[in-house]
Length: 362
Image (cartoon, rainbow, N blue to C red; front, side, top):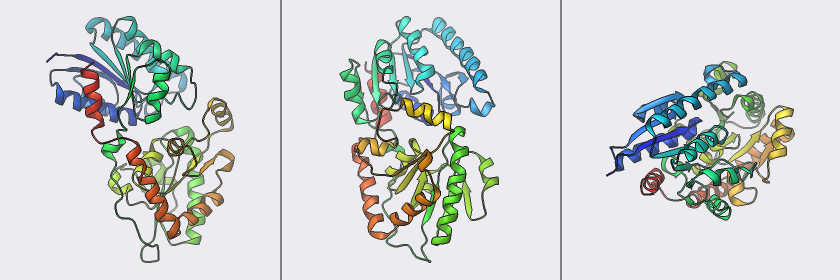
């Protein structure tokens, strides 16, 4: 069995969790592989060599201009590693803005590039597909429609399934009714990006306040920063654990689009999607977006399965009214079943193993 030298890089928390699980599978198949990575703590733990942390840039307190210089320094270290060690394979996980430069470097040096978890080129900046086609040997995509998108543009691609299938528990038992002895648990999710979180938290708190006046319910704010906890009213509990065994107890969620939306859907948790940014960021991003919906569940369905309360429409009264309607028993059970059906769309378990086999066998 070949003693491959592999370089792998991920630039955000969810991406590096997928990357670290992939490394574990690669090591199971071929324990002689030598893994070097850039990423965060998850990748550092499972790699043989670790170059630099690019996941926790925000945690370092860097301003945007400092982030650019920091990433340039990291890229220089990666280039030195490539020149000194010449990896047999390069694996990049999402994070297009930085990874496209790494991919071009690898291509120039004759190192095959495998891209796991595609950037959302179908949502905006479709020109990136052309750039990826120049440097990537194979795209390993996690949504079924992405495979055709890349193949139609001349890129070798395979749908491997969504890695969340392997880690998200399914809600098999849901409440038959909500009453004073069995109140619903309302999950409040501000998101992980600071630019959006600061706009979402006031909306979530005000929505919870309105709901509290209407129904007997328990409220839990799920976040990654303990700073959130200090600003919460007493009736909202804070949970920073991020564990799914706690989140699966949620009966209704109010969350941003993105990974958390998909996670909640796979657990069978009815929800409302919110998203709000500064006016400048909103209009800038809106000019780039090419899809009708921002929630991946709605994109997969091709229609509105989960309502989206975006920017000027992200009003607590509207969100609270929808939550009350959704918690009516006839609506609630129907929505749980519809959301759970998406598990079948996203592939079968064993995603990391399939990705590892694809990369090692080609």
